[in-house]
Each structure stands twice: as C-alpha cells, then as structure tokens.
Length: 81
Image (spheres, rainbow, N blue to C red):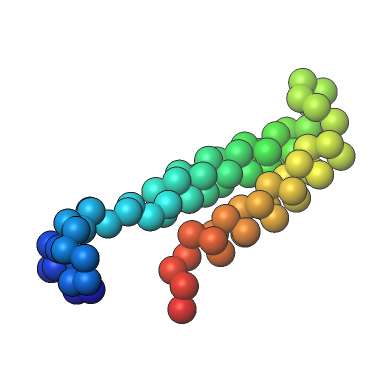
C-alpha cells in the first residue's frame, strides 16, 4: 500500500490513520533518566563532603545503574540503521 491510498486494494475497507510510534514515550523516558542520572551524580559529589544526603556508596551505585539505563534508553530511541 502506498501512503496516499485511502482504501484497501483487496477488500475495499478504508485505511485507518497510521499508528503513532512510541518514539515520544522513549524520548520522554530518556529525558527523565538523564535528569535522574545528573541529579544522582551531583548528590554523589555532595555526599563526599557532607552528611546531609545518603551514603556515598549507595549514591555511586545508583549513578552507575542510571548510567546503564541511560545508555540503553539512548540505544532504543536512536533510529534503526
């Protein structure tokens, strides 16, 4: 079928509008994960000098996990080649 077709060639049924891809959700999810990664990295630096935030080891582990999720999210949202 061509993009300009209005009816199905075989059965004659009207063609529905194309289904919107999930790129918007993936893009928003990537932005959220990036923001959380930056926040976690900043809190890890703050944890080195103060006792106002969680422990440094916990924040460092969280930062590493968010980095892995961020890389995976970036790969999923990039166009396929």
